[in-house]
Each structure stands twice: as C-alpha cells, then as structure tokens.
Amino acid sequence: MTQDSSKPSQPDQAPDAPQAAAAQNATGEKFRRGRGRGGGGRQMLKNLTTNFLAITVQMLLGMVLTRFLIRTLGPAEYGVVPLSFQLMTFLTLVTSSVNASVGRFLTIEMTRNDLQAARGTFNSSFWGLLLVFTVLIPVAVGFAWLSPSILKFAPGSEAASQRVLLATMFSFFTVTASSNIMITAFARNRLDLQNYVRIAWHITRVSAPLALVGWFGWGLDGVSVGIVLGAVVHLIFSIRTWRRLNPELKLTPKLFSKKRFMELTDMSVWLMMDKIGRVLQFNASILVVNIILGAAAAGKYGAIMIFGRSLIMYNRSMRLVATPVVYAMYGRGEFDQMKKFLISFVRFEGIMLALPLAGLIVMAEPLLTVWLGAEYADLAPVVVWMMVGLIVTMPNVPVRIIFAATKNVREPGILSMATGIVNILVSIYMVHPTWGLDMGLVAMPLSALFTTQLKNWLFPPLYAAHVMKYKWHTFFVPFIRIAISYAFILGLAWGLRWLFQPDSWLDLIFAGLIAMVIYLPVGFFVLMTKEDRDHIKMVRKRRGRRGQAAAGEDPVDPATQVDTSMD
Image 1: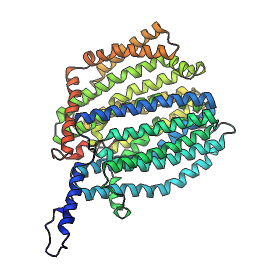
Image 2: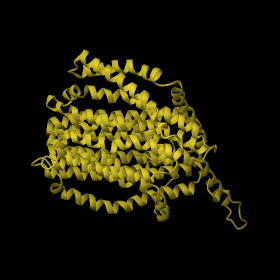
Image 3: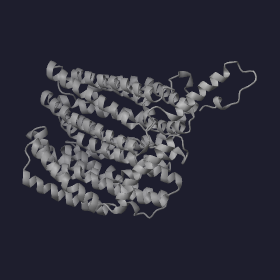
Image 4: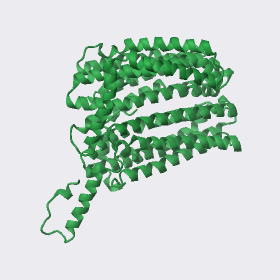
C-alpha cells in the first residue's frame, strides 16, 4: 500500500477522490499479494528442481553442440565459440553485482509493501544500466573490430569470428537488460519462471546453429545467428514474466534516480572485485590459451571447460537454497544454530558433489574418447586436475554466505582479485613455450589449484570463523567425512571402470547409474550425520515460513533473507 492511499481525505479533494483512493488501495493490495508469488517448501522444491533442470539442459545441449561444431568446423574454428562466451562473462562483471543488490533491495521493498520505493529501485537500476551500456557498447564493438590483432583465429575465419564476437556482445546487452527486468521473479521467489526462460534461451541458441550449420552449411555465421536469436527469446520471455508477476512496476524514465542507482552499487564494488578474481581464476584461462597456444588449443580447452562450468553452477544452486536460511538465522541472532547448519551443509555439499567430481576424475579418458574422439583422450589430465581444484574449493562455498550476511565483503573481494591476478601471471609462465615451463594445457588447472583454489580452501572458513568469533577450525571439521566420501567413490569408480572397460555411451551411463545407486544411500545415511539430515530437512520448513512472511507476515528483517552474492 502506498503512502497516499493511507492518508485521510482532505476537505478540498475532488468528488472522485474516494474512488482514486480506493484504486490506490487496490493497487497496493495487489502489489502486496503479488501475482504468482512463490512461498513455502513446495515453491522451494520447484525452484531447486527447475534450476537443476536448467543447468542439466544447458550442459547436455552444450555437449551436443560442442561435439557437432568440433567435428564440423574443427577445433581451431570452433575455438572462438567458447572464447566468445567467456568474453560475455567478463562484460557481465560490470552489471551482475548491481543486479544482485537490486534483487536484495527490491525484495525488501516488496515484502514491506512499499510500492513507491520498489518502483524507484526498479527504474533506477534499469535506466542506470542503459546509461552504463552507452559506455560499454563502443568498447565492445571496438574490441570486436580489433580482435584479429589481439586474439588468434583459424586462418580464413577472421571475419566470421568477428561476427561471432559481435553477436555475443549483442546477446550480453540484451540478456543483461532482460535479466534486470526479470529480477522481479527473484524478488517474488519465482525462480522457477527464471529457469524456464533460461531453458528456452539455451534451446534456441543451440538448436539454431545445429540447423543452420548442419543443413545449410553456414559455418560460424550459423552460430552467430543462434546467439542473437537466443538473446531475443530471452528478452521476450523476460518481458512476459515481468508483466505477469508485477505489472504495477512500470518502466518510467522520470523515476530514475542517480542517488538511488549509486546506493544500489555501494556494496557491489567489493562483490564485483570478488567476481573479477573468480573470473580470472576460471574464465580467463581460455584467453591465455588462445593468445599463447593458438586457436586450436583454445578450442580443445574450451570444449572441456563445460564440465567445470556445469559443476560450479550445480554448486551455486545448492548454495542458493541455504542462503535464506543462513540469513534468517543471522537476523534472529541464532549464531550457534547457524554454525551447526553451515557445518552440516558444507558436509552435505562435499559428499553429494563427490559423485560427479570423482566420477570425472576416473572416467575422464573414456568419456573424452566417446564424446569427442580418441584424438582428444590426451586432454584427460587437464580434466582430472580441473576436478581436483574443484574438490578443494567447492565444499566451502556455503561458508561465503556469512560474508554477505554480515556485509564483510571488502577483504574477500580484495583478496579474490589479488589472487586472480597472480593466477593469470603464474599460468602464463607455466604455459609459455619460449620463456616459461611449456607445460601445455594442464598448466591452466594446476595454476588455479596452487593460487586461487588454495586460497578458496583456506580463506573462507578461517575468515568466516573470525567474523563470527568461532574457533578457527570450525568449518574444517566437515572435511573429515568429505575425505572419506572421496576415498569411497574413487575406489568404487575405479572398480566399475575396470569391470566395464567403458567404450560407449551405454557403458558410461550404466556405470554411472550403478555408482549412483550404491553411493547415494551410503553418502546420505552413513557419511552424513543425523544432525546433517535434520538440517537438510529443516531447509524446507524454514523456506515455508519465509513464504508466509513474504505473503504478509512480518517475522524478520527481509534483508537477512535475500542472497546478495548471486555469482
């Protein structure tokens, strides 16, 4: 309900003032209820399920497209495709932290039924981003124009590669604008709608190149068209989602406030530094490979990056489930309960992620042979070391929630960016064939392991314990059972590889299903404690109370229930 609707009628009001006030009351009531507002454990389950579905669809479609393009175009010409996607990740750094803060503030304002403030935040973020685009667009176009003198492309494909980069830039600006519009779905706890949009986006940008390259022989231009069409589909469905959930939040340029936009970016500076560090750890590696080793090496390395990228997204999905629970506990001052919950969740993540990580370590060579061909089996050590690095760093991701909850984001941001820069310098030295160690592609995951990922294993649990005044070893305790889980699944996977000698998709899928059937009950009922299982079940109940609060009750400050670190 807006302020005006709550004021008493004045004597000099026009005769239709009561009707206007009633209309405002109706608008405020509609805003309070929301359209399609998500709440409760059922919505949480739907959010999580559709998120995993979207990631799985993206991974499977990506594997299909990668195999098709490598076999059709060759690794050198294909190399610009993963390279362009990573360049889009760099551009996203400018806006993703702003969008994270917008989601936080917009959720607070929606929960408090403050329509006027929500409209101000919504418009300030959208029009502010468009102003930022006026600076970024010339930079992006200039980079695409100069790219042949900076990057290495397959001979004869320079112009087509530039068009792929331009299409990627268009996709970035379009998807960023539409994601900003669709932030209302996050604020309404309707992440399932966001995920449906993502699925449509991925299907379009993969199916179009498959058709245009396979049937019409368009080459890289077919990929460019697919990228553009995918962005347009994302925009269309985002607008439909926004109008469905919050038609009251209209785009009005006069509601843009420079002051409000700067407030939205206040904490985001440190979050952006943290994201830059993580991008320099993982995404920037393909740039190093392209510039130093060439287009063909970049194509090969870009192909196997899909494994690490998909597992990181699965890891993020798990963390997003835990985030509102941790925020609510912190807001209520339940620090001891929060500590126990995070220990359980770190253990849960480590044990559950052991299956795909250990499976890829053991099955890397046969998987690459079946997927891309025997000539790519020599990439197995690169996949193995990439997975080892993720084993070290991913279980600690939930602990990072404490940084945003307590607004202690400056030190993690500075350290993340510093170690990311060190990682790039070390990787250049390790991979350079002339004055470096000439270690080949395996240098990339090894460099990340010894720099940023070692930091990611040690710093988050130590700093989180320091911030909350826990004992220094508090968040290292879960790694005892996590280590046991990896020993178990590695032994099981090696046994299955010896037994099946997989050389087909059927063998790999069958071995994976057997490993899953054996490991999941052991992981859940043996390796996890009863307290761990109770905490995982508690997530649904607490998310249910969050849904009731969002619907009108007022238990806790909503600021403690929103994820502000949506990396």
